[in-house]
Amino acid sequence: MRIIALVTQKGGSGKSTIASSLAVAAAEAGEKVIVVDMDPQASLTRWSRARKDTNIGVTAIAPGKLPNALTAMEKAGITLVVIDTPGTDSIASASAMKVADLCIIPARPNAFDLWASETTRKQLRSLRKEYAFLLNQCPPAQQSARVEQGVEALEAMGGLLNPLIRSRVDYQEATRLGLGVTELHASGEAAEEIRKLWSSLKRRMNKGKAPVRKAA
Ligand SMILES: Nc1ncnc2c1ncn2[C@@H]1O[C@H](COP(=O)(O)OP(=O)(O)OP(=O)(O)O)[C@@H](O)[C@H]1O
Ligand SMILES: [Mg+2]
Image (cartoon, rainbow, N blue to C red; front, side):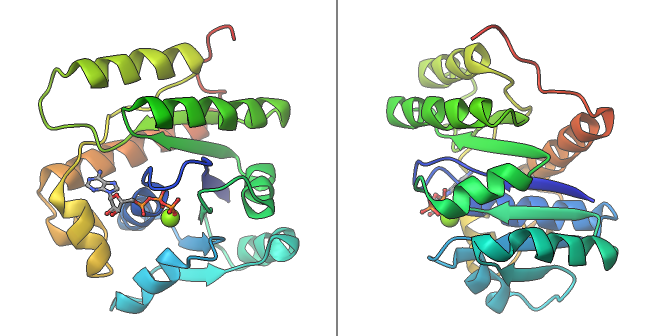
């Protein structure tokens, strides 16, 4: 069983959006997936209520109960756990970081998100956890200076995941309807992006390899 946590103390960077679509894409690729909602805002608990398909369990777990709950999930044959965390430095985020095999730090290409990513990265380094950055909500234009700057900053801080995730209406529509983007428009660009993201995460975890990190 693999555990992926979406973490960053920056609110609104796309943790819940990516967690939900990623969970769906992984399930479509054959994983037995559970989403753990550790955010008191309960975004993904609400998402699951809007969802008709029952293939992905969404469960809210208190930080103290996380390790036992994960053991039970593994026994039940779950192969992938996706943990969504609050957008604040909290006990919930710290607990998720501790149990994760890989932490994804989503950041939008703006200075505030990039600065916040640095703080989260420091936390993960001190915990000696595997992590990788994900640039989310990139503007549609292929070559934007803001995106270039984000790519450079995150590559300098550590591994940046491929692909970049663009700002697309599909992400917002899918969330509203309790879907992943691959279910909303299976052949859409957002779907393609998220499938690629799952493939690249899977490759990374299968290799059991640390994300590419340059010197701090
Ligand atoms: N790639 C994207 N394209 C378009 N909209 C997006 C994308 N990613 C996120 N959003 C939108 O940005 C907003 C914030 O996203 P989301 O709620 O997933 O962030 P979060 O990190 O979970 O926030 P919080 O820290 O408050 O839990 C939402 O309105 C969501 O629909
Ligand atoms: Mg959220």
